[in-house]
Length: 333
Image (cartoon, rainbow, N blue to C red; front, side, top):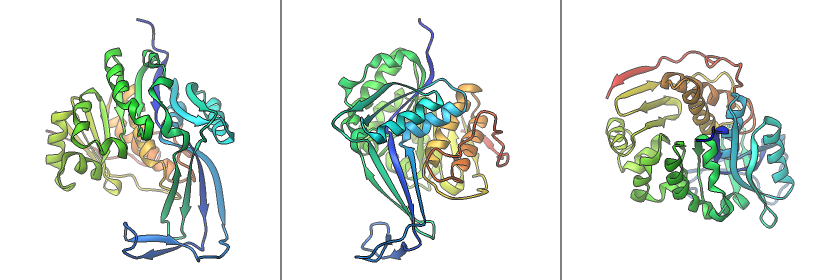
């Protein structure tokens, strides 16, 4: 068998992100908003903007940046438009040494855009234009890319791109490629139909709400949730719990860790991608769940201190204990 070319290949979205911060934005509580709260500005007026940032984002890009910073040989599978925004994404990846040989640049569709509005109180709303990112079709992907990877890190695949979900998982299994999956809304909308595909997964990332949705249980019933997920998955389940930290199970042992104290908070965008990619980096390097929790948590904490979903991330020479050492509790399942 030919030697693998990449340590990890990321699969998912690539976007151009625009961050807008304005003191004119006000948080308004009202049941007219499905979250019970909205970010509002005066109608018919010019709204002053104090800060404006242009960055790159998208789950596949964010994860690829972490892997590259950590010194792993990395490639990406995604779709952007053949436009200035797509060029910006490609330039970032090229600068970091991430291979774009499997990136599709569409001449007709535009690169995805996310516009993130931040209010003075820290609330945010994100306007999303999916663009080319959600139109990566199976016929545009050479599945031989899976021969090149030791790991794949697959994130949300929506729109036409959702058709890649099943063939990539099955082909990865056939090729002996390890699979890390951080599914998105399209996959969770599959409901029970998602469960059979979990047998192909080596590491599954979910948050508490997603775990509850997938299992049909109250998110507070953590023990029962893990018991059900352990029945479906032979590999590792990682459940993030926001400020309450993270819990991990391999079906035999369970690890629980609190969250790290945030030294500086600017923006929460990209924290999930930072944690997941940091976790897999440690699994690739040391195959230690304790190391994975520590690096993932530190990487997520690092991205919180910068504007942008892949800025401020830890680099290979940064200590995983930069923000403190976690007290990780391990128990038998």
